[in-house]
Length: 325
Image 1 (cartoon, one colour):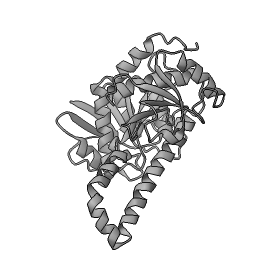
Image 2 (cartoon, rainbow, N blue to C red; image 1 turned 180 degrees about the horizontal axis):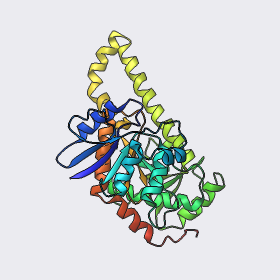
Image 3 (cartoon, rainbow, N blue to C red; image 1 turned 90 degrees about the horizontal axis):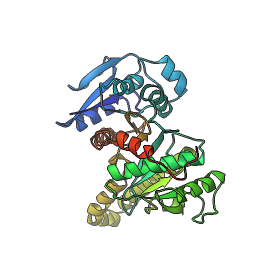
Image 4 (cartoon, rainbow, N blue to C red; image 1 turned 120 degrees about the horizontal axis):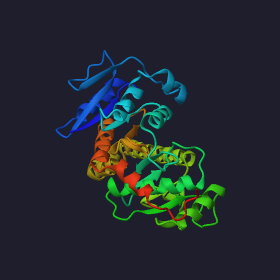
């Protein structure tokens, strides 16, 4: 039985949506534990009552220090204390990172934890890392991100030998800013299966099994991809229902459109791993639906099953030829 601590108070949709998702994920193999206000009705799920809430607009470090009894901090602490195997939170990402760094601590050798997000590409899912944990990076950080992303792609996506590309403004090695140029050199000299640069336009095509970048660029790219998917799917729905002929045609393509929506919907994975910590943390969208929360909890459980934390630690313990000390 895998116990997953669930922060119920950080969601934009409110605690009921998080609890509904936790109930969907509960099974003979997964036991969600809900952290939140004493008044919550968890529908029979184990409930740890907390008295504070970390808001989305709060400064991460201040929130962590001042709100030790918040659902977010208590859920992370449950993993640190061995009372849960993983934590899922749709709350303040910066506060989750701050709590993880202090309570869980970094894996030996990790300079910066990074957010790894599955991208629903046409050729199959790929990993974007870092998707928002580190706005300012050095080249050696990107080398570590790529290494952690490879572990994610192997253990969670089932890719035997993941290839890696570096997000840039052009495919040529000489394209990019100083960070990209230095990271390209390190990645090319590493033991990773590095295939060079890729551009943002190819993310949904399936540019690589692992696409590595700094957290600022990665977060912009991720939100652009998610916004594009949402807009296109809604535009398709609007056009189909706009006329009688369109509605009739829509009936014919309904099976295909449903498959497309299921494949591209960000709710399919529900969350992102915060890799590089000594405990398993999954960050969900603040606006996560119950389905997304359920899938984020399942993603966390799968990470426990595949010992993602241990495998990241073991991989980073190996010498990295091009790493700058």
